[in-house]
Structure formats: C-alpha cells, structure tokens
Length: 410
Ligand code: PMP
Image (cartoon, rainbow, N blue to C red; front, side, top):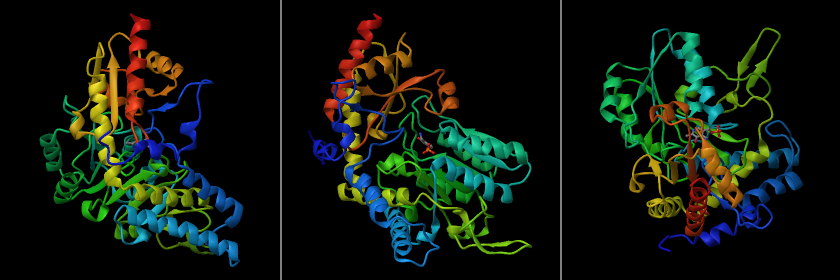
C-alpha cells in the first residue's frame, strides 16, 4: 500500500463499515459520491449537542442558548477556514448544495437577470445545477447554452471561450463531475468568466470533500457544497457568496431570524448571513459539519486526495481486463475518485443488484445527470465512488463481484 494514509485505520473510525450486510457479508461501500459515511466523532458531536447543549440559537439569553449559538457559529467559522474564507459572514448555512444553488437563482438571479440574458452551464452538470436555472430561464425568458463535454470527459475549453464571447451574465459549472470524475480547471474558468463580465457559480459538492479548496485563491462569486458528502450529517449545506453580492440580494425565505425589525407596515432584513437563514436552522447538523471539518483536517485534505488518486489508479488497473467494461471520463491521473462504467449487454441495475448481493454498494442510473448521459448516448451507468475509508480490498471485491455478474449473464 503506497497510500500516505492508512485507510484501514481510518475505516475503523466509521462504525457502519464494521457492520456486516446481508447477514454475513463485509460491507464494501462504493457510493460516497451519493453520500459519505460518518466517523464516530461526527456522530458523537451531534449526540453531545442533544445531550448537553440543546437549545435554540441566536435568540436566547440563557446559558444553554448561548452555548448552542457559540457551537453553531464556531462550526461556521471552522467551515469558512476549511475553504480558505476569512470572513465567516460569507457562509450561509443551507440544507445542501441543491438549496444553495436554488437560493442564488431565486434571489440573485431573480433580481439581477433580465429577459434575453445568457447563462452558460456545462453538459456535465448535476440536475441541481441545471433545473434551478431552467426554472429561472422560463420565468425571466433567459437563454442557456452549454459548454460541450469532449469524448474524453473533459470540457471543450475552446467552446467555453467562444461562449464567453457572447457575454453571459452568469456562468455556473461543477468543480468535479459526479459521473465522469473530471476535475475542471476552476481557477482558470473563473478568471476567464470574470474577464467576460460574468458572475460565477461553482458547484463544489464533489470537490470540497475530496481535495483542498481555497476560495480566496479561486475567487468564485458563489460556491456551493453539502455536509453529507464530506463525512458530515445530512440536512446541512453551505453557500459561500462574496459579501457585496450577498448584501445586494433580497432574502430567500421569510420568517424568524432573517429580520431586523417587523412592523404592521413591513420588515427590514437582518445582516448576512442571517438574512438567508430564516427559521430554526439545522443546529445539530451544523455542529456535526464542524466536527466533520475537524476530522478531515486531522487526516489532511492533501492526504485524502493522494489516497483517492492512488485508489482510482488501482481501480483502473483492476477493471482494465473485465470483459465488455467501458469506463467513461478521463484517465485516472486527471480525475477524482469516481468511476462510472458500462458492461456490454448488461443493464447497470442488474450489475448493481448482483453486486449488492455480495455486500458491494454501488449506484446505477443517471446519477442526476441525465443530459450528460444523453451526451454519451447512454441511458445509465454503474458508478463506483471512493473516499478516504476505501481500501484496495474494496476494489478487489468489486472486481470479483463483476466477474460474478458476467458469469451470471454469460
Ligand atoms: N452537485 C453534484 C456534482 C453532486 O454530486 C450532487 C449530489 N449527488 C449535488 C450537486 C447535489 O447535492 P445535494 O443532493 O446534497 O444537494
């Protein structure tokens, strides 16, 4: 094992991975792109909150309310530092990436985009970075164009530059594809979009969990990600926004906490980020997210990335001579730990079902990227996705499982 982290040691910290599946099978979890498993420290942080600190935040003047508020705001500050953001006011806590992107569309988009304006997306987007823009485009009569994905699963950067010539108002793209594993050259793309005068939204759902992301260096206008894909709980996500943009945006949801003053005549909004956090937030989940950040930092994001790259290369080697198997997307050296493939003549659902019977969890379908599958003329693929707790043994098991699938369908 060349990996710089001992992933067996890491795996021990995830209770679910020690639990057998289908009675006596070892769980081989290869579905972290959908959601990651949670280490004990994250689970314990949430339990501890409910056992010792539970109270509503921001409003109370009692000891528990103050402790809960401090824990929640500490989690925000930690998460901000984790992605290289100095000012934690720039981080809005949402439910997930999907809500973060919808928030931009419903507030910034509705206020600042006008009939005929162009939005540039890419062909490799997740539905959560497509549908909010489709909804907005329908409402405001906007135009949408897509940067082409090349046969090797990378973006056609010449086409990107051509589309920027058309002066889009907004460019939105994924930092890393959840299907192809392609890591897009975000810094360069952001700079080019800015030169063209566009506001840039980056979907970081598959990036922040897997490699070091520094927003001070990247300088996007907005950046979205989810806690549950980075060892944190479900129900908590992040929207980063530049302060001047967040300040200029109208609120998203109305209610408690997002206001400064309410009278019979109207209301005034709270300061950012609270302006966008109406109602009681996911407090325990926010704290769990902070614990996930601590956990990932204790491993080190460079170590996580190196480990996943090494395992991805191993996956390519292990899968190389499986009969009829075709991996879509770029080579192992330029992608994250996501391997989507087809097996000639066998439906991905059948592949996933047989693998499941062996205790191997993979995903089959369009992975919320139907247009991308359309681009590759594929109704569906099978996806194995990796994280810091996966081992070479997991990929050996995948290989053995696929041999079984082929044997059954031969
Ligand atoms: N974007 C990408 C690239 C994703 O992989 C996902 C989750 N599959 C999402 C957005 C949506 O994340 P969530 O379901 O947490 O909102």
